[in-house]
Image (cartoon, rainbow, N blue to C red; front, side, top):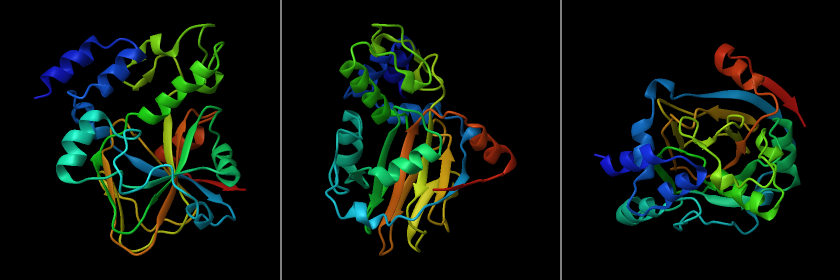
Amino acid sequence: MFEQEKQKWDKLKTVRDFFEFIEDPEVDATGYFMKLCDLKKRSSWVSARIDFDYDATEILKGEPQIRANEISNTTRTPYEIKNHHQKYGFTNGYERYKINDEMIKIVEALGFEEGYSAYVNNQPPGIMMYRHIDFGMCYQYEQIARAQADKGAKLKEHGGALKENENILDMEFDKELRQPKGLKPLWRCLVALDDWHEGQILNWEPGLWKNFKKGDVLFWDFRHTPHSTANTGVHDRPLLKITGTIKDDSYILEARDKNIINNIKI
C-alpha cells in the first residue's frame, strides 16, 4: 500500500516537487502523510487565553470565501476530492471567511510574523469534516503567490530569507517539517471565537477539545495529529485558524511542557 506515493516521496527534493506530489490526482497525499505520522507525537494543548471584546457573528454576516457544503480545490487535493469527498459525500466541512482588523489584532498578539495565513473557519450545525492530517498546503500556496508578486522576494515573513532572485519553488523541501528547508518551524493554532456548545465535536486525537471558552488558543503538532470535527448542535462554531512562524514560540513550548498558559489582553 502507498508504494507509488513512497517512490515519488523518496525522489522529492524541492518545494516544486512537493506541489507536484500533492497535486497529482493519482497520489493519495493525505493517506500517505497519515501513514508517516508518528502517533507518539500527536498532541494538542491550550497555550494562551486572549481577552478580546469582539462578536464573531459580525464576520459571519458576510459572504464566505468557501461554503461549508461545497467541495473546494483550494482546501483539498485532487485525489481527496475524487476518492474521499465525492465518493463518501464529504464537503469542505466549514465556511471560510476573510479576517478583519479585529482578527489581525489577535494574530499579532500571538506573535505571528508577517506572511501568516489566517481565516475564520465556521462550522454550521449539521456539518462535519472528515478525519485527515494537515500539511500546510494553503499556507505554502500563499507564500508562493507572495513571492511571485514580489520579484525581489526575500521572504523575511518566513523567519528566514531567500537569496535574492531565488524562486521559492526551487528551494529544498524539508520532508520532516513539511515546509521549505532552513526556515523557522511553522506553527498552527485555533482561537475560539465563541464558547463551546453542546454537540460541537472537535476530535484532536487522541482526545477531544471541549468546554473551551471564547479566547482559548489551541496549538497542535499538525504534522502528526489526525483530527476531525462535526457540529451536531444548534450553534455556529467559529474559530480563527492561523498558520505561520512565531517571533518567540517559548510561550507555546512552556504551555506544552509545563502547562503554563499565557494570558493576553487586547
